[in-house]
Image (cartoon, rainbow over all chains, first blue to last red; front, side, top):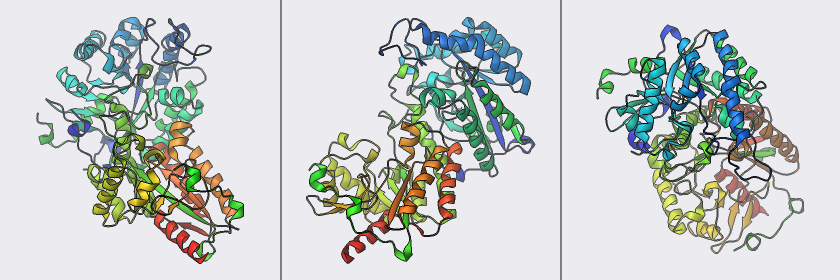
Length: 295
Length: 291
């Protein structure tokens, strides 16, 4: 289905007002992406190209760079979440759940939400059987979290023409690949609608640090600029803000403090909620007129 | 025609100075680019390439990123420019008029000038029938606004060697693709002269944010630095300063305040005009007539 068949163009200025509970203006959700990079495949991202270029196989330095995130960086981030009492959302490859069991257990013990992030870290357009990938990811999450995931984020936000249809059919209720608004929106599928929750490619350490090559401090500056503008916009109607991190990027020693300081800044504002994706989902659905929810 | 056949080399110091009315030093020309990205093709730009750099079709994440500009970002532009009483030029893909009628209507109602910008966002070299595309684009905009556009900016400033001839034949009076001067110039075409206005690839959020990957705040600094220099030079000869922005880039929450800061800075100076392309064209043609 074309994107324009899934939702109509709608300017944010012309919609019914959305109201958050307890007089809050803005809900912020923090997504931690945990991946498994297959050492027998080209690395999804690289920090260092080999001398004179090319793509050597195996690519040990870039595999190790990512592995550092799950061995060290994640635990550094976890301490920040614990200290600030924020529950994050864990977007995790199905295969990473077995490989990095300690990470999955730490997330479960803290009541973090698990969302599907592909079974392996590769474009959904390269997956042989997309439905099986989506289903197996849900099964892997169910095995550790004790319940079916409600949300999905494609690896690199990738989708095929069919992805939202498959997600609904496999029991998912929201998707994060459609970064086209500051409020949740409904996407049509061939069966029931699915909710799109505002994720971010802009306040995202992959885009900022690996693609755009910013200094570490830009994560903080951009997060605060983003937050202040959305907070101001939210005087009219509720807004959602996402912050996205990967343990191998913002979990690096020289970057972590910029992530922590961004959360500290946001946390000081009394009328801002730190929510998980499913809390945003349930709230958004509660704001919808009943006829929109009928299948 | 190669560029040198259209315009001989000319040093700015060898030309008589142009003067703006009322003793103004500088005319600021703001261009808001409104585009349509076809989901069935590779996206015009990407904020996030797929893992291992795979080419995506469909490319939903980057399509959605651009779509954000039309759903949310552009309304931050309207708020800013209406508040300041500035009426920019919109360089607009003709398909925007149907796909985002609400945005086109808001621009038209706010009195913004419509400039042709291709039918949809793709390099002009890949358009099968360029002449027909130009004609269709201008006709769609003319039907929508009631006026035939005077100006044209190629998507990504792209041209083939024939483009200026085809544009002049279609009645276009000025183009923005020739970013080679601080002043308007006249170039030769098969259908008479065509004016170039100093558009910009420097004070432009695509090269700055998507190609050069500067921090959000650098947009304001570069614009201020350019303005200071041109404002000083504007004491002895008129200067034009273009600022080119896109809703999906500068309309992002973390960037909009730097755009606002640019106009706040400019507003603290006397002798500044905010003109659209048509106003600059009129002034330039009148200046030439006076010799």
